[in-house]
Length: 202
Image (tube, rainbow, N blue to C red; front, side):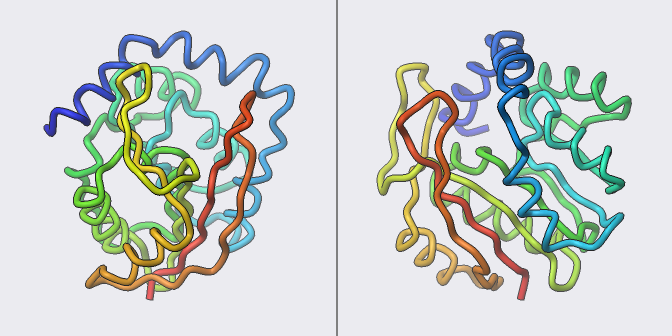
């Protein structure tokens, strides 16, 4: 495992409980699930979804409650254990670079998870996601808005993204996607912005 990924995962392993608490009690009272709803608007009822970087299981639970078939995975073992209890189902602890699915999902939901990958590894994962999606499958992914890479004060790696940078990265892939929608959203309890993308497998 690359050292920068290891350090990022170590943060989540060491702070999983605090992180989960932040994203349950106070957060859920004010979270309207707009982004998962936008993602679902591109799918059919009951479709299969891969929650790529499920964290404590918030969005997977939402998808299950709305009748979708969900496979949840995360690089943090503690998050997988938490999500498994919430979902009452197995959650796979796996490095995104090691996943290997073949045309199994109508949609892949990667909410604030791919943003922890360097470009070369992000390209590898986008190829794996393309393989995992069924024909005309949908990918949602989000990044903190910017144009560089950095370590934050908690030693987590971030690959910040803007529309131009992401389009260039997608255009260089041998496996093709079409960008269907791009929009910005506010980061919870912060003045910072996220940039969101909906893509279709071509």
